[in-house]
Image 1 (cartoon, rainbow, N blue to C red):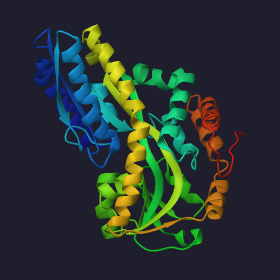
Image 2 (cartoon, rainbow, N blue to C red):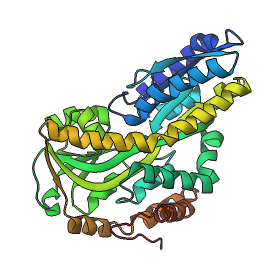
Image 3 (cartoon, rainbow, N blue to C red):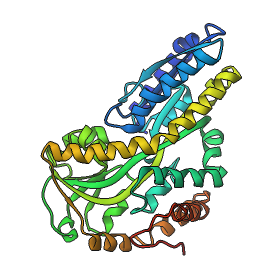
Image 4 (cartoon, helix red, strand yellow):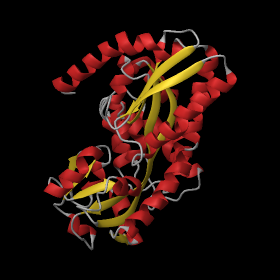
Length: 360
């Protein structure tokens, strides 16, 4: 994290502990929570579900089921914390509740990005979220890490819809991507090794200008955001590859903030957090469909990668899950256990991989 970012977080932490913290505890029956995300609501489905479902549902249920009231100070699109700052903002109490992608914490949450390590998985987001939840239920370490290491409670999981590839220039075969610079969140960049493309780590807010100015010439991106961020303008060629939906986002709450609330409000937060997770698959599937339809409507040049080429791409990554599992093991994380549980969970949904994975 840069010194500028650390300074920003320190100032906001001081502000939170003095001003907003006082508001939160000013009355025994009235509470104010700060909720935010680095991505904007609208283009980012997990943020939309926070703003449109979680926040109003918590307010409604607290008013209907308790003697208390609860309000939210909401900050999306990085207005309180950026995409790579949200975990720390929740940990430090700058945010009481934060939604973020684990992909922007490649060291701290390395293993929580496990769906990225087995690409070409479930295309359906509901199926993906089912498999991801099964792994969390079977591997307590994943949930415990948030509390033990980062002083926050995991309220619910969310994700991204099915990943495809947008480019500034047309391409016909995978060989055409050799040497082409392609942006991505980080954990998904190894997918590009087979194609010989040049991976560039980036974030959604930087994508449009970077594509426009030639910092890179492609983006690994799901259609909901590709449409929402208007990436089709500088990069109009969109190829459906089907790298898979990814359950790699989470909604967490600062433990101190959670523990100071009455038990009846805590119960509502936990239940609505699970509701947020349970509707994730449906929300993401709807936005995948709307995103593809929207891209076609605005004139994006769309095609589907032939299945034979897709299977070959998947085969080239056959050793990726095992490699990442061993990397996590070496970091003191239960990498092999998690990846084994994930592959089994995906198989249990009935999904058929284009090329099966195994752990060595």
